[in-house]
Image 1 (cartoon, helix red, strand yellow):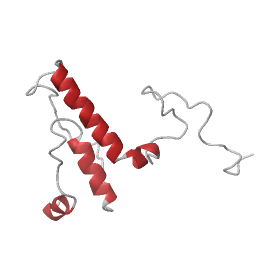
Image 2 (tube, one colour; image 1 turned 135 degrees about the horizontal axis):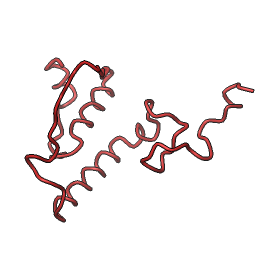
Image 3 (tube, rainbow, N blue to C red; image 1 turned 90 degrees about the horizontal axis):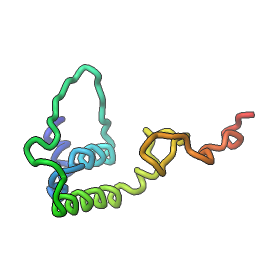
Image 4 (spheres, one colour; image 1 turned 90 degrees about the vertical axis):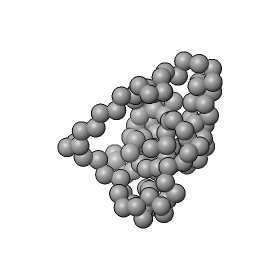
Length: 112
């Protein structure tokens, strides 16, 4: 990424000290009109929690919940209409099960 884009979107948000600063950054880049690309040819290894430990204390759990709340409130509109998430899947569980009732009415789309 060009440094100018990083600076344009304000870089990483330090208030998201541990979790979601990368997600927030990518969403800011998207909001600024740039594309985020994925490639199957890059191989990255991330040893989650090696340096900071587990979320196993009340303080760490409270910080993590606060970071979730920050991300969800900051990006509520995009989360509600995620263009990369099928409207046929539920938004009420994390198991990618089918939405019921379906979110898309096929008759409204012109299917018969």
